[in-house]
Every structure is written in C-alpha cells, then in structure tokens.
Length: 388
Image (cartoon, rainbow, N blue to C red):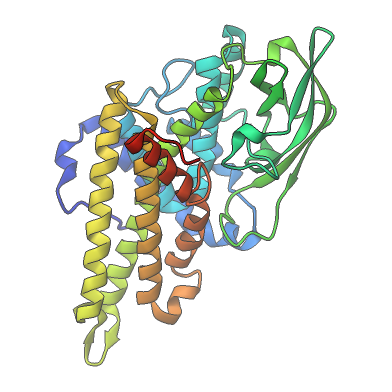
C-alpha cells in the first residue's frame, strides 16, 4: 500500500485547497509507512492498539483536528473528513481512536464544558498526553440511548454515579471517561477520571470485528464526583446526540477510505492474477464488479464533500449526516464483500485487506446509529412522521 495514490475518477482533487490536500497526504503517508506494516500484529492479538503511535497522531494534529484553540489543528471540515478517510484506509480501529478522542470527548468538552474543564483537558487530549472515552451505550441500550439506566444522584455538593456502559472504544486506556447518566433533571454528562474509586474498565474479547481497537465495558459503582465534573452546558439527550453527529460525520468519510483500500487492492490483484490465459481483470464479470466499486466510491466522495461544505458553512442538518453515514458505510461494505470475492481463496487470509475491512464495516454499519435507525431518521425528515 506504500504506492497508494487514492481513487479520484472525477478529479475531485481539483476542488480541494492546498491545505486540504496537504492534510490528507500527510496522513496517507503516515498510514502507509507507520501503521499498515504492523496491522497484522494487532489484528491477531484481538483488542490491541498501537499506543506507541499516539504521539505521532497528536503531532499530525489528528486529535480534535477540526476544533479551534487549546492546541487543536483548526482544520476545516473538508480537511478533517479527508483525514478520517485516510485513517480508516488503514483500519476502522485507527479512525475510531481519533474519532472518539476528538468528536466524542474533545467536542463536547469544547461545546458544553466550563472554562476550567476546557483548560484542564483539551490541551492534554490534543497532545495525546491524555486519552478519553465516551460512555453512552449500555448493555441493554444502544441506538435507543434515551433508555439508559446509568444514574447520577445528588451526593452532598456533588454526585454519585452508578451504572454500566458497554462497547466503549479506548475504555481501558482512557484517563477520562465522558459518562452520560440520568438525573432527576434529565440526562447529563460527567467527566470521570478513570482512577476514581468505584470506576473499572474491562476489555471485551472475542471480537471478529474491530480487532485492532480497544473495546471495553465500564463499571461505575458509587463513583463520587464533584459538581465541577459535570458538563454545565449539556442538558438533555440532545447533547450526546450532537456528539454522535460529529462522529457520524467522520464515519461517512472514513468508510470511503476503507472502500478505497479494498478497491485499490483488488484492481492490482486482478491485473496480476492469470486466469484462463489472461488477467482476471480482463474478464467481463470482474470488470462489472470493478465498475460498481468505482461508481459507488465516486458517489460517496461527492456526498461527503457536499456535506463537508455545508458543515463549514454552518448549514448542516443532522439528517444530512445520517444520509452520508448510511449510504457510505453501506456501499463500503458492498465494495469490501466484492473485493473479497474477487480475491478468491486469498481473500480470507490477512495478507490481504478486504476481509479485515469487511468485518470492520459490519461494526461500523451498526455503531453510531444502525443502518435501520438512520433509515428512520431520514424517513421522519421526509414525512414529518416518526416511525422510531
């Protein structure tokens, strides 16, 4: 993959600024040089992540990349999307690490936090000296976040938290967990230092998907917090959902990267694979599949670029992000499946990327709102009637 040049059939590079291309190309080089040569090692370990690369990710400005101040890179949302694309070209776990740190931890602190919380955490998180995780999903409540059972009750001048969170990226390596809990006044967000008494994170093993990612279950038993740890601006379910919109935006771009990786690999493979006297790429059925892949990747690129422009203009509606996340993950999964098919028996071994991306995308299709949930979000936007 060191020679990866991207997929750009409609010459969309001409629409990008020099700064946007520089951000993309810097991450593209990093992923090819530093990450991909080691991906087998981490996938085979089940739940491992190359933590030694965190300082380099921070140096590239990839934590909170589209935020301003506090040591953040301040990229526009086109550049940020391209960065997410290149990270997921490496692996969904790599993009998830940066996406959680920036979109699900730094963004809510920047948006809903106090000045003291921003000063304490944002520079540390941007520099990779601190790692964060986002505790919303529970064992019995995923997309239906409003049903959460995690509870925060008043305890003197502070709070007492009890509950369980599951499927939490970076949970066991985090220094701070942003935990969402139900209170008498509604859902609120709390910054929980992970060394507090009563907090425990256990890694989840046995995953077929996102193996190069740390996934944890969080247990909170009578965790005491001061009032200063509550996000003062976060009131109600809209606050965590706004964070999910940020993460879903990154996913819409990231999925393109996974699709591009599979497409590039299989084009190279079918050109070299000899079948019945000629390259596999010269067969009609092969070309039909490659054309489908290219067409869907190109449409996904156009969709993501337009959503990015609207986001930069302050005109983005959350349903537009649902459209992009739903479509782009779905086509990326289709591309990965076709690529694995064209690789034949070779497609099931980890010398090739397609199977790994295919399995990862099964998770990406589920998290941050399932495919069907985004269908119903869009259905409500179309009809004005909620079917959720």
